[in-house]
Length: 294
Image 1 (cartoon, one colour):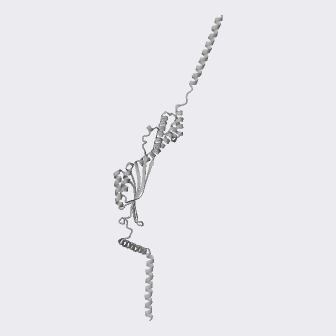
Image 2 (cartoon, rainbow, N blue to C red):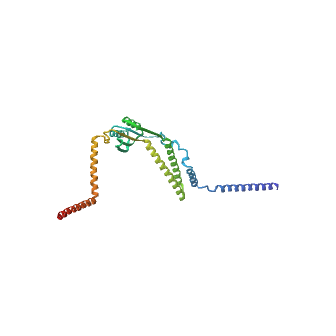
Image 3 (cartoon, rainbow, N blue to C red):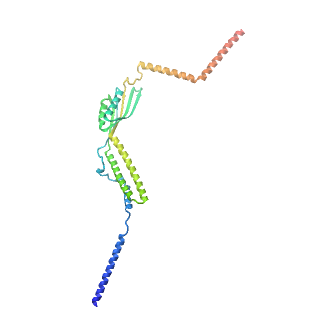
């Protein structure tokens, strides 16, 4: 009898333990069945946080993403000199430019009789690697250098910063493109497209700055002014022939001005003519009356 009682108690304890274990498994199963947050929303939120941080505060991209890290130098300046033959000087400059791969960007010519001076102003661009050769050739042919200023700017750090900005924005663009491929809701697609437009605008702007820097680095610019006080180039009227020619020209101008002034005053001229005619007739009639009366 006692043995049967202990067996019954043991069976109940085992049954209770199994029921408790089953309830625990059901609770765990219920917890695991809760769906996780959509991966798309997490990705969009993470990308938004990444963009809000600003590409300016990011560390530069790795050296493998920067294709060009060579030193970037911009050379520019101006030079002014005197020469006895400005036409020949200009021809020499143009010939030197063609030989060295440069070109003439702007040209102006002025004459001043007051200072007995004829002056040329040229704005040239020449490949940076040939800038020193061109400048040496120019100074060697000048009679007297009045001024020379050469400015050199190192824009290497600026160049690398812009490259890193473009690289970071392109990486962010790829991230948003991946999100766009996974997105299923229209609101998410529109938000991603807006972000992509902003990123691509930043890329285009930075690329424009980079292209401008490349142009400045590749071609150096130089403003050239040269002049002459040679009497054969600029005649200010010190010679007899020049004075005679000037006097004849001025006299002819006076006659032309007088002629056109008389034409402009034709009513007054006609009035004076009629008045003089009437006076003459009056005098003639008076003389006739005096003769008859006498």
